Image (cartoon, rainbow, N blue to C red; front, side, top):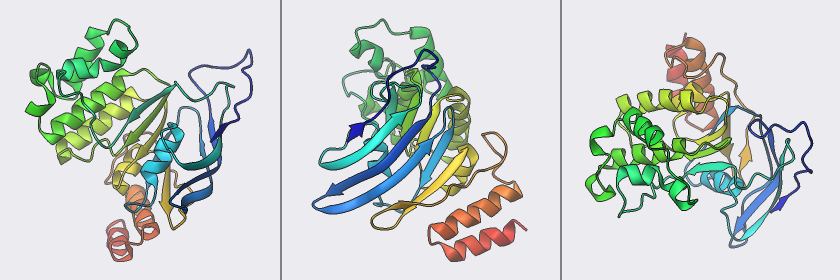
Length: 265
């Protein structure tokens, strides 16, 4: 993979920049997951990525984070002239919590690894906002799956990076916590450039400024759907339901799409 970012200019803004991915290709065992794939992430936008399991959504996320090994090529350009590496907060599908550290220590992990003094007040505030204040002293083995995911989300939000990549960050949560933490993410990440992978069309429409479907083999991005208004949106809105039906059609769920479309009338 080649980073073709031009040299910085005096007018560069270190916290607001477009990201342009061109001609991305990833292959495993001689089989292309995707090739000639282009994706633009406008500065400060929230982009959501849908697609069938195994199509390459997580691979695309990891490509942007420079975490893919193997047969990889493509160009990543940032409009502010600075390479993307080092400016990303990345939340994987797995919680990746260190088992010997408490929730609070895991949330503060980034600062510790950089040899910096953690912002304890910020950590405690985020832990409270994800509903884990009473579990801040616990270790991962003492947490449920949903609690681990909430701790991982708090750790990601703790990293004040201009670009945030999130792989199904709400998948292990119950419906009430999912909606609540979507609202938290929408608020805390406002102004950052976000790419979020999800299997839930309504989640994508609730949060995303741009919603793409990745499908096919090799995988291709479909034209983006752009929900109106600001996130988090009302998922009972008729326009959102019509766009959900369109996304379901793109995903091949035609019968479900027809039912959703009828309910949106």
